[in-house]
Length: 412
Image 1: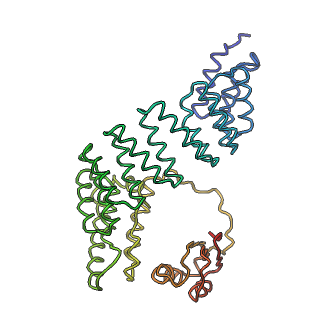
Image 2: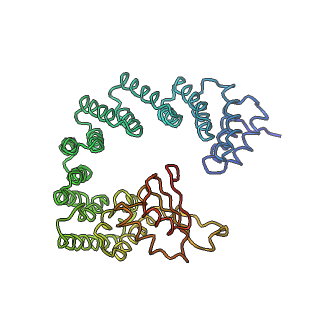
Image 3: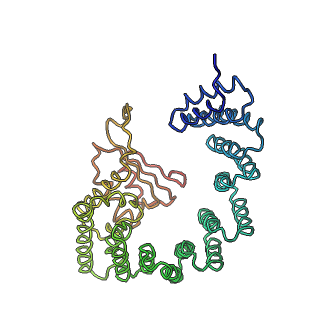
C-alpha cells in the first residue's frame, strides 16, 4: 500500500480547514501523526481545528505539543495566545503573545495589547506602546492605538497629549488631527476641537468627516443653527454620508426654547427634515439604506420629547426608518431560533427601563412616566431598575406602575 507523503496530507488538511471542514482536516492530520508523532505542523493544524470547534482546552494541548517540537515557531505561539484568550485564561494568553513577539511575530502586538487591557493591566499596555513609539516614532498606527487605549481608560488628557505629539512629529497626520479634535470635544473644549478639525480639513478639503465634526463643535456650544450649514456641506461633499444626514435632521431640535411659538416652529422644521430623511432613504436612494444602518444609535432625536407634545407618529416614522436600515445592514446575520422557550410572562413582551431618574426629575416627568403609563399591561411586563438612592413621591408612584421595581446603585 502506497503511503501518501505527509506534506500532501497537510496541504489537503489546510484546504479542508480553510474551507470550513475542520473534522476532515483532523482526520488527515491524524494520518500524519501516525507516521510522524512529533510532526509540529500536523500538531499545529490539529490545534487550529480544535480551536475552530471551540474545544479550547484540547486546542491548547495540541498547540503545546507542537511547540515542544518547534519551540521557536511564532505563529504557534500566537495561536496558543488566541486559544487561551478565548478560554478566558488571560495571563497565559499574555505570556504566549509575548513569546510570539520574541520569536519575531509582529502580528502579536495588537492581541497582546488587547489582552493586557482585558486583564486590567492597562498601564502595561500603555508602557508597551510608548516603548514602541520610542523605537519606531514613524509607526503611525502606534500613535493611534496608544490614543485609543488611553481613551478607553478614560484618560482623555493623556490621549490628547498623545495625539498632539503625533501631529507635532507628523503635521500631515490626518487621522491624528481628527482623533485630537474628538478627544478635545470629550474634554469639553469645542473651540480647540474645531481648531484640530480645521487642520485636518486643510489636509483633506473635501472630507465629509471633518465638515460634520466641525458642525458638531457648534452643537457642543449650543449653537444649533450654526451647525446646520456644516452638515449640509458634508452632504454636498459626500451625498451617501449617513451620519451627516441624520445630524442634519435631529439638529432641528434645540435644547431650549424662548417661547411656545418657537417650540411649534422648531417642531415643524424637525418634522419637515424627518420627512426629507425618510424620503431620501425610501424613494430617492434606497441602496444607501445599509450605510444608514451602520450608524443607527450614533445620534437620535433625544430632545424631541422635551417639547412635551404627542410624538408617537414622529417617533414611529423615525423608528421605522431605522429598523429598516438596521435590517438592510445586518439582516443577513439574523437567526430564527428553532425553538422558542415558553414565556414566563404569559406571552407578554418583557420591557426593562434602567435609569437614575425615577423621581421628580424632568426625565421622569416629561418622558419616562408617559411611556410607562401608556404601555398596555396585557401586552408587556414592565421591569424598572432605579440606579439612584434618591427617592420621593414620584419614586413611590413609579413603583406602582411596574410589575417589578428594584432600587439601588447595583440594580442596573
